[in-house]
Length: 147
Image (cartoon, rainbow, N blue to C red; front, side, top):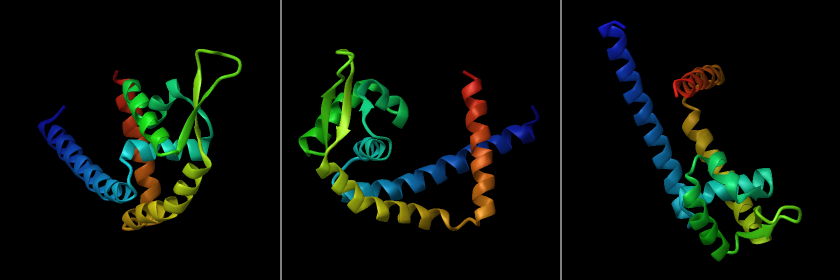
């Protein structure tokens, strides 16, 4: 690896990290205004879009350590946004299920959430977005393969 390649890779890492932070800060501010933290919002969004989920699998789907899921589920349960439901066929499995109140909540805030993200991303053309998606996937897959 040349010195130039290393410098360019480091610069790209910094630029990518700063962009990620700036976008996340904006999105997280909106989520906080809705009375949730980003993890609570992610769990609620997952349940709304994908249906009931085993508690043991939620962490992997939203990139959260499994030990934190119980805490997040407890908080959402206290807000009446989800309930725990025992699996009928396997006593070891418990599902998180969104409640009607949770559905009403996410339906009331999600349109503004997705419009905010679109507003942030619309600095790029459709072609640039597609290129960015492909390149970021390539980077992510390569990083995963380095494990």
